[in-house]
Length: 333
Image 1 (cartoon, one colour):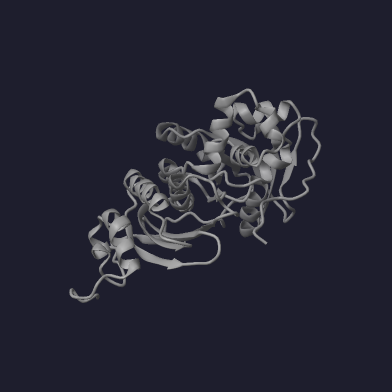
Image 2 (cartoon, helix red, strand yellow):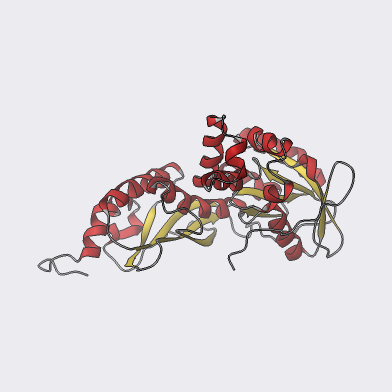
């Protein structure tokens, strides 16, 4: 604890100015302690952590408010896929310098999302770095005892289901990097804005968490690409899958780029940053799951079936041919 007569350090001043106002949960102790406390509620605590790094997960000129939202939301996406409700998060922030012009909108947006998703800031750390800006968040969620939904658990005959649309974020990044998609959508400002928004600000499917918990046999979020993440889910469950590529849900913008030959199925299913829910739903629960998703306001679609075997999941085109991919997913290394 800092003595009242001791001038606050630069780090203490930064925390007091930008992050104490966000720490509204009593368990955060007003950020005056070395740890925080989550009150038990008779269930299980789910813990997830993700870091986002400048130049890897966001671009150096991305607005700070979008960086804040992405940092928190990628973790909320993981919680939703486990069937967990957000409980709080801790933040580690590595900065080159305490730049008010960057920190003010960052902290404001982080606070807005903490309120929106009922996931309060509990504590964390700020450090200096000579390297790229880095934000690491560890998020905590609550789920009734024994009800967490794991990757392992998919059974033969289960339907492969995804939420939302796939491939938008990868195309948004391509737009920001002036790739082929930029020329393909040169005259469509609304489509460009939507795709870039999907890259910069994920939409975690927290509203779907209860339905996932009630009906899914296995689930995870799609962060590194649909093809690769489905392979991970199947490997954990000791099964394989067959996917009807034509049933993969696409936005109008992504469909237009594919129809023009600007984007291929490879970039759609392996580009990453979708932050949608991928789950296996037993056939006899599919209708109930779809109904629950509709009530939650989240679009879902069955795109394939879990099958026996250990092979990498197959994606089948409209002519019944298996599609060969150069890569299954984004890789950090």
